[in-house]
Every structure is written in C-alpha cells, then in structure tokens.
Image 1 (spheres, helix red, strand yellow):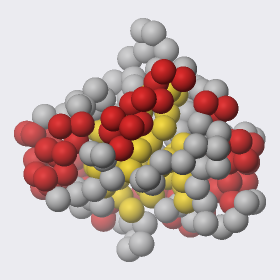
Image 2 (cartoon, rainbow, N blue to C red):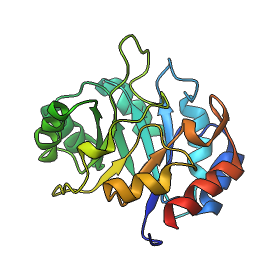
Image 3 (cartoon, helix red, strand yellow):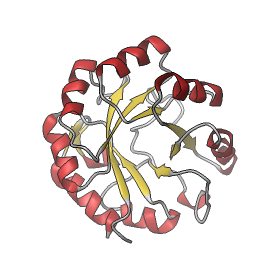
Length: 214
C-alpha cells in the first residue's frame, strides 16, 4: 500500500473532529444532512465546520433524496466541493443536480449481492464518483452509517471508468485487508472511527488513515 490512498472521514459534527481528520491526512471531510442520522448537522453548524477546512481538503455534503429547495439552501449557505447523493436518486436526478449546482456528484450504491453491481454501470455515466457501500439491512432507518460490510469479493479485481470510494463497515482493524482485497484507492469511513454514534475519536481516525496507507 502507498500514500496515494485517499480517505474520506464522514459524519463530522465538531470542529475538533474536523481538525483531527485534516491533521491525520484525510482527503475529504463529510457532513451529513439527514435527520434520522446521529451525525446530522444543521446548515449553520455545517457552515462553521466547512469554513474551518483548509484548501486542498474536499468538503462533501451527504444528502438523501433531497429536493431542490433543500439543496438550494444547502449550497447557498455551506461552501462545498462535492454533493453526495445517498438515497434513491435516479441517474436523471444525478445529472439534474450536477447541472443545477455546478458541483461534482458522488452517488452511493448499496451492494449486498452480485446482482446489485449492475447499478454501478447504470450510474457510471451520470455521477462523477461512486461510493460503493453495503446495502442497508431490511428495516434500517438510514441508508448508510450502519457499520455493515459487504462481501468484498464481489468487487475484487473489477475496474470502473470513474473514481470510486469503498465504504461500509470499515475500521482501523480491517481497512488494510479491505484495500488488499478490493484494490480500492479511496475509502469512506464514519462509524468505524467513532467512540459513540456521532462522536469521532481522533486516535481512531489517525489509526484508520495510517493503516489504510500502510
């Protein structure tokens, strides 16, 4: 493994956690705008956090089936580099969001079995990046952040024509194996670097990035 592994620390809610992610070498920091998540932040909170992110670290807003009014308010108030769509947005909606806001879009794809991989091709022509995540369990209230991994063998050795991030159940203990198994060059973690839901741990963040980059 090499230092070119790029890590996104998602679900940040406090300035100290943003600083910890930046200091540890995160390439992206993510803010969640979804009321059912313990990592949900208000526009005012997110703006304050985003303004503290130094140049060179990408600021990502995670939304779930957000309408234009919600995205208008979000993009007006929070300085962002990416929009992450984590709901049931269609490829047409992805293209619409890109055109309306002029920001690159990361589209999350939930994987549980081989048949789910077809969605990667469906969205590959619309999104700028894909986030390959574990499909939420039946009855889950959140589309992500459930500390669930999927079978990495499903994507081992595969190559797609656009950048992608591996997510789902990653933590400092398994991240090196995940990179080795999947060939992922970008990783997304949230619950795997927390002391409690929504509360990040600086030591875990540092360990995750160190172990990912080897």
